[in-house]
Structure formats: C-alpha cells, structure tokens
Image (tube, rainbow, N blue to C red):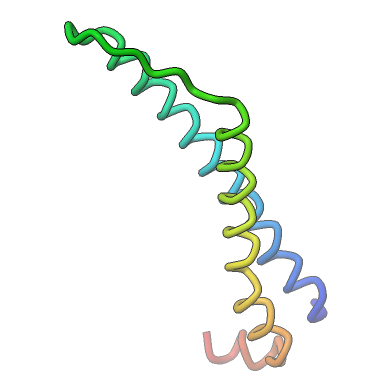
Length: 86
C-alpha cells in the first residue's frame, strides 16, 4: 500500500464519520424540536434550512480537516515499519 492509498483511507474515514455525525445531529435536532413541541409551554421553534446547511458544511469540513494530521503522519512512515511496530 502506498502513501497515497493510506492517506485516502483516513480521508474516507473522516468523510464517512463527518457525514454520519452531521446527519445524526440534524436528525436528533429535528427529534428534539418535535419533542419540545409536545410540551405544555407555548413556544415554537422553526428550523431554518440555511442554518442547517451551513452547520452541515461546517461539520463535514471540520471532520475532513481533522484527517490532515493522520494523513501527514502516515506519509512519513514506511508501511513495513507500521506493521512491525503495531
């Protein structure tokens, strides 16, 4: 496995975790809004699609940016050295 392939693994993991976390967060937010709407207190919460989209982009961007450090570290290591040292 070359350096590029190892780096792509970290990038894909970050993208999957960032996307999954973002979608889970949005779903949890909608579930909480629905739950709060059942409360006997008179108030309303209206989610704004622009805010949700911006939050999603930020969440995925942070996840992808956090993969830069592992990618840089694996590019300096020899794969055999990593396998031998665990």
